[in-house]
Length: 123
Image 1 (cartoon, one colour):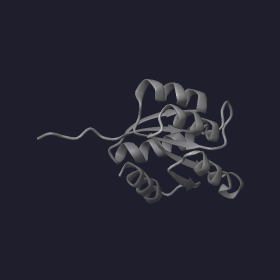
Image 2 (cartoon, rainbow, N blue to C red):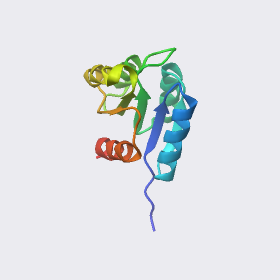
Image 3 (cartoon, helix red, strand yellow):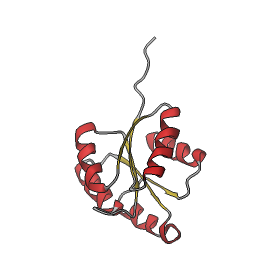
């Protein structure tokens, strides 16, 4: 029986609790998961691992999510990116879409919303 390789996901958020929850949900759902606590680390990890999807927070120190999205899309135009934010009622999510995010999620994120967004961008 030939088993397909699970999709790989890089989660980017400066909150360790958010990383832990998202990592748990995605790992239990069969995804390969890596994480980074800021945009600079995310770009470095992306260059090494080339994940299928990047899920990034928008408001972070040491490189905002919007800048990270822009850099990653320039390097890899086909990369699927999901932006997430709870800041200012999610208003930054529209900017993330304009920079190339394929989907957006308003924090706090529900498990089914996260998994649905991933399935959608991986289609």
